[in-house]
Length: 392
Image (cartoon, rainbow, N blue to C red; front, side):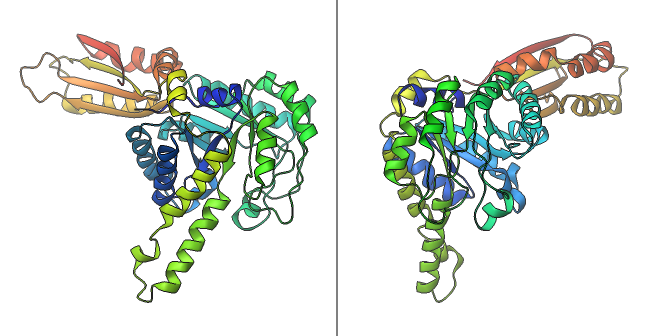
């Protein structure tokens, strides 16, 4: 199960002077193509779930497929939620299965961006989840990118970057040095001198958004100046669109599956090209050896209730427990159950699935947990046993 901590993966790339690709996953065709490319190149990869893409798709439905693909492969994978605009969106992403979140409040005033990012860092770090902040502003130039990233480019200041990283505690920083979301018109002009100053000013790996349209030499210079993660989507979408158009021209019957034929292949080819260019190829084994594995965890209570407690009262306990505990950061799901064996030692079970071992520790210290346990739970049950489990 080679899901690994995102911060460990990016730090490895930073120490060894390459960049890991965070490739946008918009559907199963993209997911398959990205995973196949990483497996073929034996490379680490970030599966990037971009919040704006889920206006017309169900985020919670896609995440189980993304997680399954990550756990089924034998190369290191992290799952990142990209361009979340609020604390609520970060909590939603963590609950759904992401082990990294990116805070997109860079369009706000510096102080507002700082405080909102710091709030996300506090909640995410309590769950062991990596946080990427953004300073400066990377606009969009066309299509959905123009809609979701309006406005003018604003460059990142090295001095502000140093203060931002120190005060927020982010694990990596997305910077603005001349790239755009979407495909830039004309030749992109990147401010490498600015990037070098930012690298000297901060202690965390740097991230570039808007990789489509850059030349091979530009990518190499970005990596040489401290970029350890590159977000990449538009070129994948363009390759998929070209294949679909070719299929439409060739397929006169309009068979749906035929129109989508080969989409995963062209996505894989473009991802492979980037992986090779950015220095990721062949690094899977060393990344797995040097990164902490990412495991789900579970807090389980087996318990009995007095015979005087009715079934409806037990149901009320479970209902109130779910309501109180689901809001705690890091909680992914809550399951209540009854033993099938009539002679079993315990009659009831409350199981809380959490993002990580770190999330369990924070969960057990959370005021909402203690309030529910002390007010509605311990006083109503008799004997019990509590176990904290980590996936193996």
